[in-house]
Image (cartoon, rainbow, N blue to C red; front, side, top):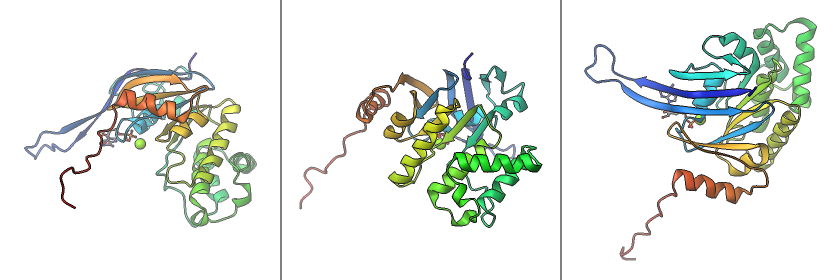
Length: 261
Ligand code: ADP
Ligand code: MG
């Protein structure tokens, strides 16, 4: 059985158009009849321009959003009918995460989020320490979160997603705005997590990242799946060509011919 299955999933957002306003609501189609499946233990990267539906896809797996049409299954459980069952299996780390308590330490923050997952007592301490170890934050465990670098902060977000030991991990742009060294340490961490058998879906804009961490990439645009392919033995340049072929090459920039010097 596949770990994650999308069957013709559509999701739209309605903006404006309150009952007292004459304006009609504006509908944004974030996903349109998207079908794909992710095998157990696989790492799938989602590539696509801004606004193409990558984050929406992750939120639908994590039950932060529910589909308007179609079904999303996680290890056979339907996100609509077994929301809690799915939530137990899925950890989500968003790049825009700002929900940690800045004056508490990394360990204290994770203790708090473990308690929210009903992990308490000595088991809580063990779990927090093992997760800190796993993401390479054990040395920084007693630092206040506001003193962590961006790279360490991203790791803490991944640690939080791992606290319930989920078989499925979702990462939204895990290396956004990180320097190359910090980014490559996150890729190594993702590699270790993949080796431990976790199924992952990662939204990214970085071709090198997609190649380094994934088994396959899915290219999405305007909520539609344009293509999905294995990246074994693939170079970043080849992936870029594949991506541009599917999404359309960017318009050449005009140099303003005829403008007097
Ligand atoms: P991506 O992560 O690929 O940049 P998103 O999944 O965030 O794209 O968004 C897909 C589309 O859905 C975009 O047009 C975005 O503006 C819209 N969208 C996403 N979330 C909301 C929301 N909460 N309310 C209204 N529109 C949204
Ligand atoms: Mg996004």
